Length: 376
Ligand code: COD
Ligand code: ZN
Ligand code: ZN
Image (cartoon, rainbow, N blue to C red; front, top):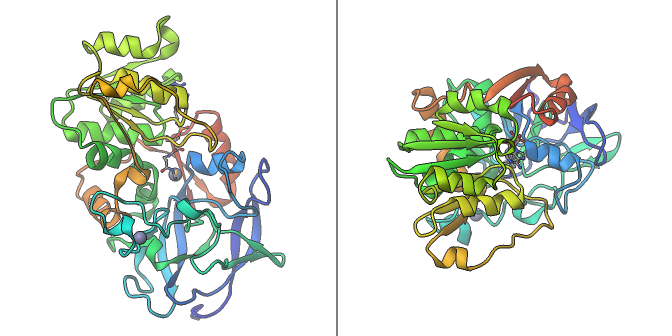
């Protein structure tokens, strides 16, 4: 029997307030309104930013909330006026929307849609309401996506149709971690063949940066992490050497400068630590280096460094989602993955069932997992 137009009762992982475990609850998901899409989620990854929100580190986060922003699923029904997807289509929700009309969307060099909730942080749909309720209470939406639920509703501008044969349990990582890292290399920094790169932080995002550097033809890819257990995966993804700052007395940027005759062409910070952002800048060559900030630092933190570091010729760059405009790039990334143009298998370290979600977060906190994919 069709569920279109009806409220769906299903399971979702609700974060009632910060610093609590997620609770699997019975929720109601209202039908999509005009220009909205209801999706049956098939698989979702757990990203560090979800954990940051559990820990209350992201300013203006709204609670209670259904987290998750790295999912893939199948369209269950659509509201009036939806033209880019139809029921039965495989899709990836986009935490960075693409309306195609705002200044951010129309600028070829920008990917920041002004309608994205990553900018406004309302925790609601575009019309300032939510489609989720639980025990009579409104439950907030997360980054226009909310994938830790059997069914979600997103604005049409926050969803991309992907290939009909896409393996959803793999391509879900294209919804955040993979694209954020890979895009930072190929779309934002535009790394050239033969250049040298340094990658700080070897989680799912850092490993995706390494995959991008290898694809771009970098001649050296130096991988850096305080947890040496991450090195095996980094080498698997294409790192040419791995270093642990704990093994050196000198600051890590001095070590990298020495290894590379004055610094790398490109450095990437994939941790979200402001000290390491400055280390990444110092590790890049003073006259031709580019440092890319990929990680998101705690909301109220600030960067401090001497302007002279840039005056000598360095460049500092950053963008959400690797600079990709999701509505166009996500379908292409999925077909490229299916055509074996790159692999994401090294990122997919664990698979759990949806109701084991808190175990998945625990493994991330213990540094045991890269990406846990939850299946419904
Ligand atoms: N020096 C070296 N390595 C370190 C240090 C340090 N001081 N501190 C931590 N690390 C290592 C950890 O051992 C770990 O291996 C790695 O850094 C971080 O990995 P994860 O698994 O915690 O995190 P990721 O890869 O899933 O993502 C981390 C980001 C901070 C990049 C991520 O949360 C993020 O900010 N994503 C991109 C920004 C974005 O677009 N956000 C919106 C949606 S996510
Ligand atoms: Zn993420
Ligand atoms: Zn826009």
